[in-house]
Length: 203
Image 1 (cartoon, rainbow, N blue to C red):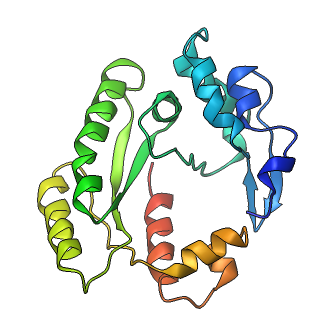
Image 2 (image 1 turned 90 degrees about the horizontal axis):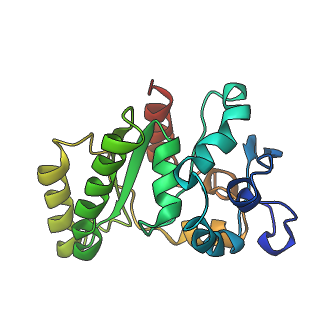
């Protein structure tokens, strides 16, 4: 997103560990960003013994929540404490699933975590849907996994159209730019626009 992680002076970690105000970098490609870097991964260990740890991110967001129509929390792929406190702070969870068997099998653990959060700390949490990703329609294994996602998860939430595998995602990340800025005419942009529009309709 245009920022160099190693050069950040303040990050989300300062807010959730030291309970400082959430740092906001304004108007980056039309968005405001609260940045993080590798320090956040070490923060997870510090959270283990932190007082009221489950509410740290939710409380960090409260002072700024009315300033935005939409706040996106980008979670790590693992289901550790950082993901847990993100679910506590969220209203909805959008689940990306790579279209291969191991990624799909891990979805059950995520659903169990969502249920646990709803039963304990955030009864309003809802599943916004599932997004199959890195999909290759020429690959028979991807086709089978996409079918399994559709049939086994549709009762939990909407299944969005699959996002195809594309090297442009990696290229854009290396340039620290959103794909829509890096390559605004890329074929996947309409899919992402449709997904964003669906998220904006959530209440």
